[in-house]
Length: 64
Image (cartoon, rainbow, N blue to C red):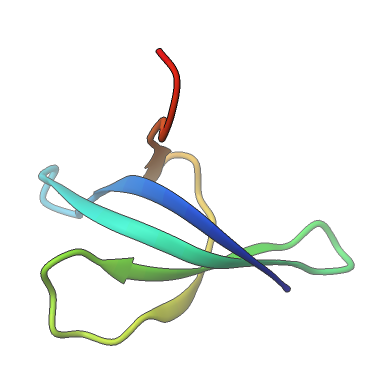
């Protein structure tokens, strides 16, 4: 596991988007990619979910 700070947009099932933050990633032995995700402004605690590039859009945090 490694700690990270990755802002993301999350595609909800209804097609809407929510802002979130990945604060840890874990790569398993069989190519598994898990992230600890927290949705910004939500009271729900962070949770481990498999990373899915069709659901998560990683946002740029510096540069142009």
